[in-house]
Length: 149
Image (cartoon, rainbow, N blue to C red; front, side, top):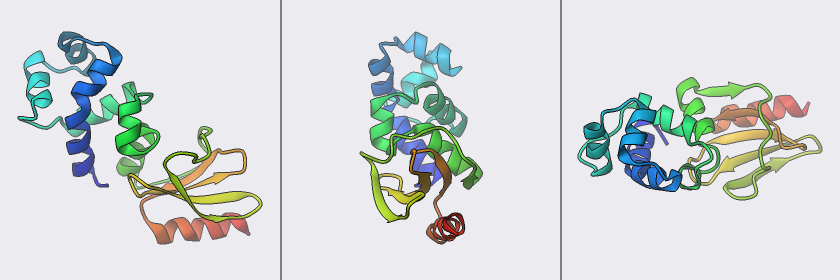
């Protein structure tokens, strides 16, 4: 997925996320820093949300099942990866890849996985902490090899 695909995908789901949270249009517009008119235009798919708005939606509603389903796991991880290209440090604990992840390689310390929705790669340790994420398969494989040495 690229930024434009994320913007289009999340823009189409903002109304559902709002309903999932139980917000009125006024409340959602206030939370996102939009006018109600702009929110209505996005919800009716007459316009797309801005990248900044999408980042806010993913950050504020990262527990949303709707966002997790359309982006494959933690929405904020996908946004962070798109913004930074690569994430290379131990991060928060994951759920281990039980739902949206395909195991590509594994050793006694690490797992290399690919997200089946967004198609990005990540490396997690045996305790399910994320060490690395990238959309670049070669880069992910090289980092997996480096960590495995």
